[in-house]
Image (cartoon, rainbow, N blue to C red; front, side, top):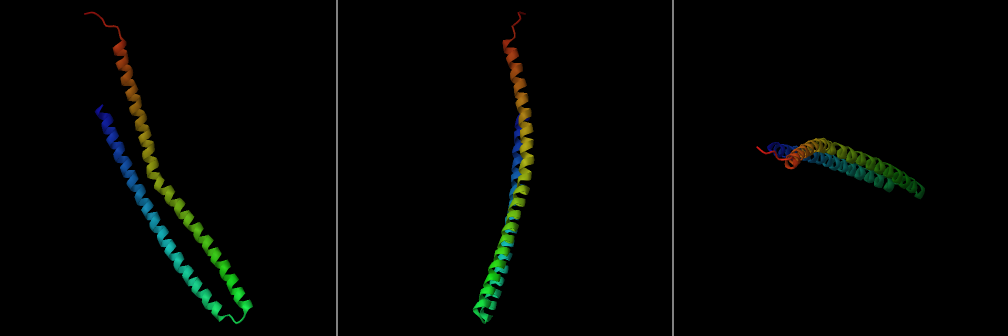
Length: 137
């Protein structure tokens, strides 16, 4: 019986360790997302400043429309690329954060199955002893 308590304590410790590893991985992923978003914001600002400068230098309406069209196209392409990159970071972070929990969950499942089997054996033995005919001394 004591062994089951030791197993439960070890499983709890393993799950806590796995949870902490998972949280650390998520934290690194969020830091990566924040850094990437900051870089994108800086690039987008510089792109917009360059666009505005070019627009102010345009001498005709046709040239202004051309600059606007080029800006809209490039801004959209950059945004799609950034969204794709962020999506990949989210997916990678989620996969990596799940790995420690997955390992602990399979360990817990295995140990729980073993404890259940031991409990069934103990119960069957107790039931056999309780229903066995008593012999006279």
